[in-house]
Length: 540
Image (tube, rainbow, N blue to C red; front, side, top):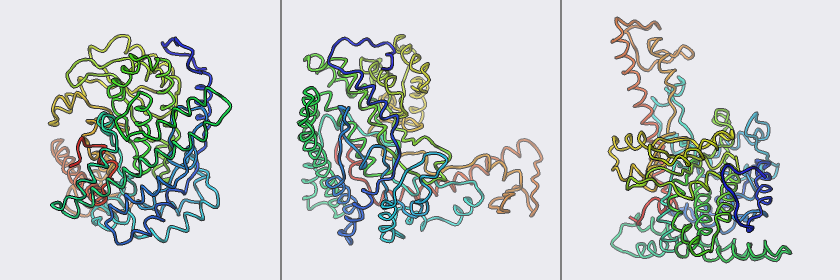
């Protein structure tokens, strides 16, 4: 059992050895490739040809949730899986398939981020590939690229980034709204809008996709209810009681608002997973977990339905379960960002929207949970300001001193000022959270990321400027410094050099922006219903 940072257990209702065993098992997990989602999406898409794309996506999502493998970890109080086994990465053929087929025989031979894959999985994926070739998100982006973008890529200035071949990410749902409403309310509201004949057909298709998705999600929860009930027939009476409570929770979860702290934590984890089942983006983040979970925590503690020890166990199990998810990327991307990263940021502390300090019991419990897990997920962060409690800052420092590399520390005075200067209302800016690895945004109000769309090699841009716009490797030139075809650049003064640098930056920034716009346009053509509801307090 790893030593606590500051926490002192005060009750006997937690098996700390079991928690340590679960953490150790997750440390030893093995990455594999899971074909289930790809096969189920293909199965559904074959039956919906000719229908609006957004409905096809929703039906494939719901079909997958009703048919995919579900399982429960033996030592966990939190349930939910995104693939058929722990740490398996699903495949998302509707976004891209070419690179998957090209690298099938290389996944288990990589120098880093190895994915084991059996021959049956290879055969399954090769079997569905012809259906998707020419019809993926990556194909749609490719078809819209300008010659300038392609030329800048050949120069080595621009790399399109993952969003040109994968789903969106860098999303922080409005968890406070989801916990207070439940998901059934969205399905019911969407059903009413779907029947509104004053709306356009596109609008009604959107609401239909929301209803289909929400019903699939609620059925997904109930599948765990059945599985947990079956698992409850075990000899260990303590575990039997836990499984029975988890089963009862799953059967009715999100049919109404979250009723307990345990259910709230479970819901947050499930919503997190659902985003990664629907889309293979990354940086799906929890936001200000200690703020939106506080009411449920305090209510259960006051009712003596929850001890601090049990709350810590639940949060720690949820932290550990985050490391069961996985994503496979092309090796050209992977070799620069190894470690199976998902960038699922969770932040504690900081100022509330009213300007008062938000540090609370859950802030400290999350710091302790990160200490007990010491895994890469969630990507743990802490906000601070000039009036943050000394005890809180010391707890953060103690965690950093363990060597786990977390929390990342965010200065509220600096971050809030920057957001306000961008035109964001101060109340929203005070409620900011880190996203991914890392930008700042407002939970539930950032509908599309502004980072990671395109990668620009600014060092390469500087090199081009020194060679009169030529790439010395390929001989390609898109913009020049001086007249003539020579590769020498001449500057009459430092001011002239600086003006030229600004001109080169402006040119390649504009080219990069157009590249990102083409990727975004393709995403907007296939809005993800689940994500759409998580980002709005009301269906538009």
